[in-house]
Length: 132
Image 1: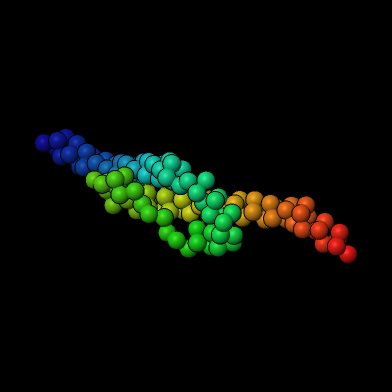
Image 2: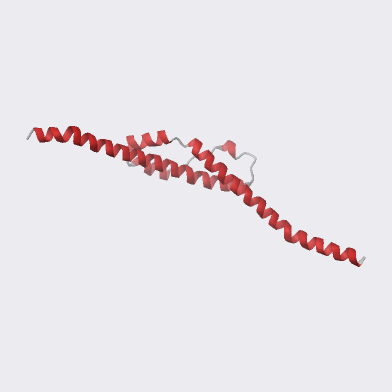
């Protein structure tokens, strides 16, 4: 009887100490999976061509809008997921989508600035110097 009680106490002690760690490990892997999924989805859903074009057409307003506007989440990716997964996915997706939008729109702004400067020096400046 004494051996049985000691074994039972040891088993419960190990169970109480190990099970929370297993839950944390499972939650950590779930959060890591959510982050990886969010990065992948952000890469797939953000169109660099569209945001680069917006940067060319709208000048410096495009990066400002890309920074201020929150990206829409793909709802299908979150159906049936745990709250920890949804929270991690939402944060990582919005950060990465925002970063990609800003990056593409700034590149578009830079392309527009270079193109307008080249056009000015090639076409406008020679006409001004020729009329003097």
